[in-house]
Amino acid sequence: MPTWKISYPTPTTLTIKDGTASYQRQGEAPQSYTTSQLNEEKGLLGKLLDGFQFGEELEVEAFLAEESKPLSQRTVVPDSSLQGRHSVTRYFSDNMGRGSVGNYNIWLMGREAWIDVKGQPRLVMSLSEMAKGKFPSAQRAVLGSMTNLLIDIAQKLDPLPCLCGTGAETPEQHGTIESIISHRQHPNAPIEHVVTIGRCTVCHRGYTFTKSGDSHYSYSFYVREFPPA
Image 1 (cartoon, helix red, strand yellow):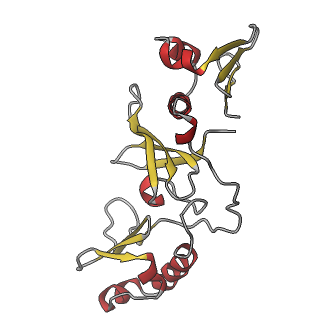
Image 2: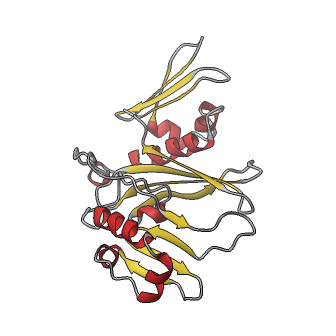
Image 3: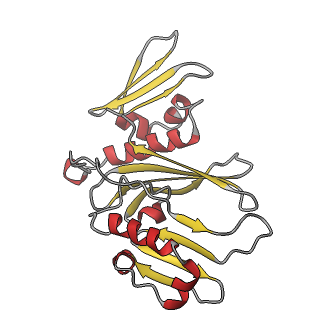
């Protein structure tokens, strides 16, 4: 049963279940609306969500969009557990900071590794290739013992049917996310504050991905399950 809550400025709860939204602001009587009302009555949803965070507003919007589909088209998430999966780092570099020029940068993007080493064109390897240690000699010479770490990571990730539960912080790192709401920028944020909501095309689990920051400094990433319990 998806529930969204805020504690400031006025504690408020919105719960949606079986086509009905229950809305409660502290000190006021609870109110009920059909999901059709929320979708169709202009301004109603915006009024109810006043005070909620940008990502939460989009989550409600995305959930209502899914709820409006016929039952035969709605997503069913399996009961299978993600227990035992390993959360892994997706970026590696020996760059020591601004003004420093490192020898390598490595990005894990879905089931590929993008490897930039000094003096060489970008190498794109599949997880399967990396799990078998198939590094060209030029990259291996620069990466040194880093290759052992990359092989270990690939051997953990490659056998999995999807990369849910492995620490992906963006849809691109995950690799099999189908967007419901894609790269929506906060209209009033002074920095880049982008939200993407989507589901894994393999197991259908949903996630809200938030990226916030500035390309001249740094970014922070936040991921949570969609819809929230």
